[in-house]
Length: 329
Image (cartoon, rainbow, N blue to C red; front, side, top):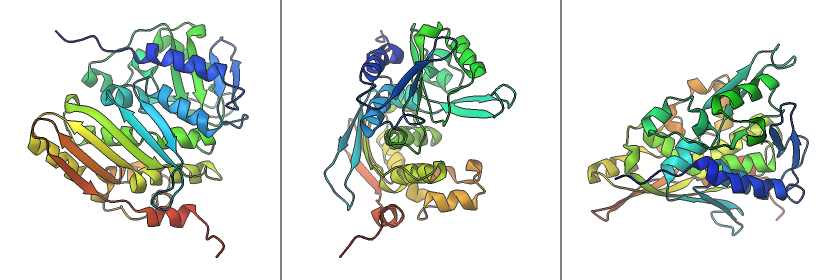
């Protein structure tokens, strides 16, 4: 008989409570919108912090992962994020993945169009994405939290939609708002390094149920000066600095193939900064090669055979070139 699956929203609730309790220390602003839903500003008007980003990243993984910062310089860079989960599929794909498309017209958005990709455990209450049918997972909780990478609070029409789709009362819903060009935003996006590997494994049709452990790390850059630069930096951190170790079951040949196919080096666009590639594509994600969105370096260990395969490599020279000014002699 299968064991009951954990509730990502129930596990995230105490993490949200801690975030709210420590809001002043973490330089966050907490308000409620007209409906009564909680809004946590982690980088719009509030300054936010790297520590807040670490909290948000763990919350975004539905309480099924840990994220920590190591300020021990290596590979020529001072700060590295380390991510771990013993429930990587639920933590990364059922919760952390930014897969819920939310949009409002100019009229609905109070004079400006609104668009965001929702991430976090509330996705598993609404299950508006086909991915949840494949995962065979649906959460049931009376509280939920959604993370949005936006520069303004969601309009009322978006809040109402999320409440309706999640089946929540306003008091049970919280939005955490983390612009990418902020401390918390940059941190929580780079902390998706393990999720990027899981998403790529899914695209390669590797059986998700065979992924049983995951660890990862990536260098943490300073926030970019504007949203485009910030997005480029966080993508580059994973594509050229991300390291992932997956432990899998199933066939050894499939594990070997996953290791070989997973790293970003398999993309013909590999080797150029994301900012340059994105500009060349006219800022259209769909013109970029899907194989590029993967960690730089992977290890895949196979239970049963005890074998581990390695593929890919870091490009810290590229990251330093775009992140770091020349120092004094």
